[in-house]
Every structure is written in C-alpha cells, then in structure tokens.
Length: 353
Image 1 (cartoon, rainbow, N blue to C red):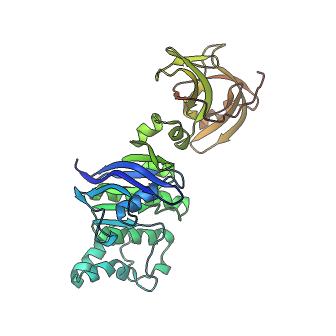
Image 2 (tube, helix red, strand yellow):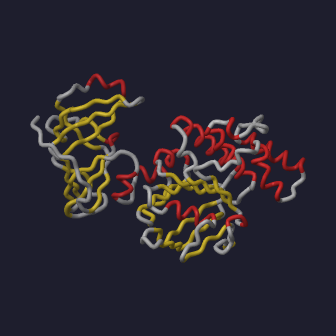
C-alpha cells in the first residue's frame, strides 16, 4: 500500500522549550492513524504541521510524494476538522457546505449534487435548509465533517473532533467516522487524548509523550506489548509491582516467571487486571485480601490488598457473589510486562492473611 502522508524528522520547538523533536510517521493510503497522548505531548503540533497551520523548524512533510512544507493550508491537499464546528450561523446547512464550492465557480447543479452526496455520507440528508442553531452538537460536527469531505482531501486531519460531545454521541460519531473512512478508503490523521477512542477506531496508534514518539503500532500490539513504562501506564489499566530479574527468572514475591526480556536487577512489573487470576495449588500464588468489589457493566473489578501492594482484578460479572469482603485468596499472573527500574510509585499495604 502506497504512502499517502510522510512526516520525516520534523522538529518544532516553542520559546518555552516545548514542542516536538525528530518526528517520523508514514501514513498509508486508506489508513487511519491516531496521535495519542496527554495534553502538551505534541500531538496537535504534528497534526497542524501536516495541515500547514504550523511551520516546522526542521524536517520534511510530503503528501503522495510531493513536499508541502512551503504550501499554505488552503492550497494543501488536506482538510481539517476542528474541535469547534466553525459553521456560519447565518447560513443554512446547504450554504455552509457549498461555500468553498461556490468560490471555485462550480455550477449550481454540480455543487448541489456534491452537497447531497456529503449529507448522505454523514446520514443527514434533508437538513439542507436548516440553520446550525436548529441542529444538535453531534449533527453540527457531522456537518463539519461533511464540509471537509467535500474538499476531497488526500489526507483528512481531525483535531479531537468529538471532545465537546457527551459520551454516547462520541461513541456514535467515532463509529460513523470509522465506517465512512473504511468505505471511502480515506487517509486520516486523527488526534485524541482518549485512549478508548484511539484503540477502537485506529489502524495504528502513535503514542506521544513530551514531544517524542514512545511507540507506533497497531492497537492490539500497543495494548498487549507496551514498548515503555509510559505506554504501559497510559494505555488501559495496569497494576505495577516491584520485581527482581536474574538469569532466566523474574521474581515477584513468591512467584517465579520467565525473564522474557533478559533484564537484570530491580524491575517494575506491569500486570493487566484481566491477567490476575486465582492460583490453583495450595500455598502457591500471592496471598491477598478482598477489600472491594465493583460491578462495571459486563465485568466486575475486585480490589485486592497484598504485601506487595494493591492489585485490581477483573472477573466475570456472574462470579461476583464468589468474592466477599475480607475474604482471603491467592492470586497469580497469566501474563506480565517487565521494565527496568522502579519508576512507578506502587500503593503498598502490609496485611496478614
């Protein structure tokens, strides 16, 4: 699959010292790549550099092999969907969508056909004569998306487009965007700080932190195999414990597991709550006391206190009655990730069981 957008060695530093340094990202044709990270990580700087709204200090940006670094936003083969809808309040939906087409001197019959196509794409046919004030926030954002699609960009850029919407609308819109993207084979660069959003819609995710890329991979790979302690902390839920690595063994309290990364010395061990399970044999596993059980929809979360720290364990919701407060159990881990150093502050509470 051909490379549609290439960001090569891009650096942009602000007077505060913040910004991005040596960013390299290739987005293939028809691919949805998400820039994910906390506020201030540089994800929006990368997106706006691709759109021409920010000039990088160094580096190259190409779209279908042609440099766009010195081309202004309005002349780039890109379109941007912002957090705010930016719709003209005094214009109808049709006029908002047709505005740029009319500037190109497009014939009325042609632009009307294109407007109808775009509205059908976002499932808002029949709203042509309405004003933005007559639409919900979700509908307005879909109109903003339709307007961007009318430009037929080679790369569609989305800057946290759903952040102002409630949770239900966010879910509906991201599913719709993913459907449109897949059906139309659109190339998208998407920015969000919402990990669930990124995991659900992306072909690949670029996890950023402090102006640098921590990991770039598929959602499954990033969740299952975080490349750094930051990614492990940022993506999903994770328990962190102290461990000791030596030779082929990774020791966590009474547990001895394979030292897959061949680390040595003190390590931080990450364990997903779904990978915490009841130990089979008597005397095996980490002694734990149940201190809280919470129903979380299709699963339940059990909080465990151990001499190593506090653990969260996910269980089937149908098994919730099997876990009583102050009940003593022993747990082990089906899968762990280990990282050099003791960089995570673990909650620790000594208990007797």
